[in-house]
Length: 73
Image 1: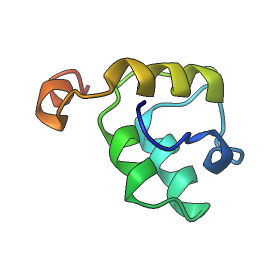
Image 2 (image 1 turned 180 degrees about the horizontal axis):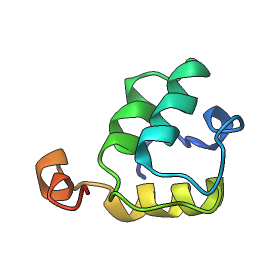
Image 3 (image 1 turned 90 degrees about the vertical axis):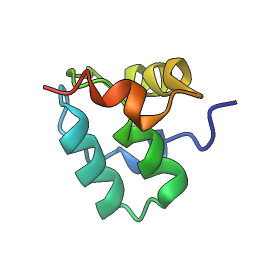
Image 4 (image 1 turned 120 degrees about the horizontal axis):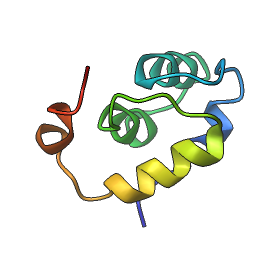
């Protein structure tokens, strides 16, 4: 299991959006490291909605930030 579902913390995100907006919205909603950490490892792409974010978090489960950082724009 990839950890905490970030979708409840992303209700204020302005989709489509990238990793920076996801992190901003989640932090503003009070998300902890268990949410912000996985969001920070996501590929630098735009996400259409919270479900797409959750799918990406599940796919990145176990990848270190160093593995995914190379995908950042």
